[in-house]
Length: 287
Image (cartoon, rainbow, N blue to C red; front, side):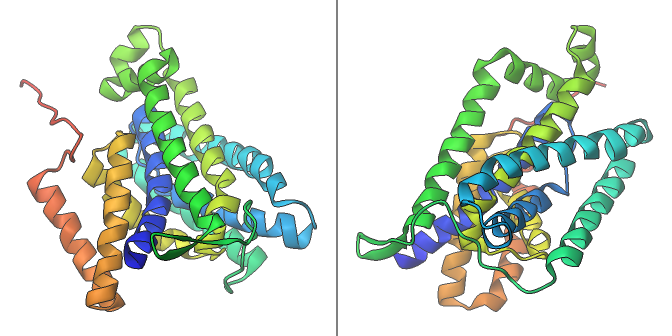
């Protein structure tokens, strides 16, 4: 049961980042490689809020939301929109560059040593089904599930969410139907960046604040997104939690050295057998 619980907690981090991927992907058709860096930045801001400025960790929520939204909007406006007409390869290169730049700034400010993050929940430990769990872990799992389900409902039940789905289907037709696609795109980058950055005091007690964490989680969050289906947040929950449990079981039975190998094997299997994911739909075009 302990292995299962640890896998769920790890999987929730993948779900958070995969949800951010989906928000940007649905609204703009872009896979933002820099997305995990917003979560990492949020953990550092949560650390600074408490240990540098001496404020409550609750202050890190609006602080991270505003900072992440501003940086996300700047990314879309400065490095994505100018190269959109040059093709997907140009977008990918610029997003990787933005990710490296964010990581470099965090390294310069907070150095390479992992930093402990004070979470929103008190330092209480509970026993559930014979497993010792912390209050911070319960908050992480609860907030992650509420956020992912809430964003799924928003995208299917609100006019703005449906407009995002329409844009993901056909950007040109959406513009002809009167949807302001550029504004929708910059809004998606800002919202995804703000929400992930605000998750710093929630995920930080589990992940710590480590400048290189984004390099690790980007692949695993992409795999969670691929398993569930690109653009589908319920699929991201299943993919992220399933991957977290899968890796925890590998670590228990075969050791940590096999995690990356078998995770890559799982990624290749998913892309070969069902590239659209569990909840995705295969797109067909008549030529």
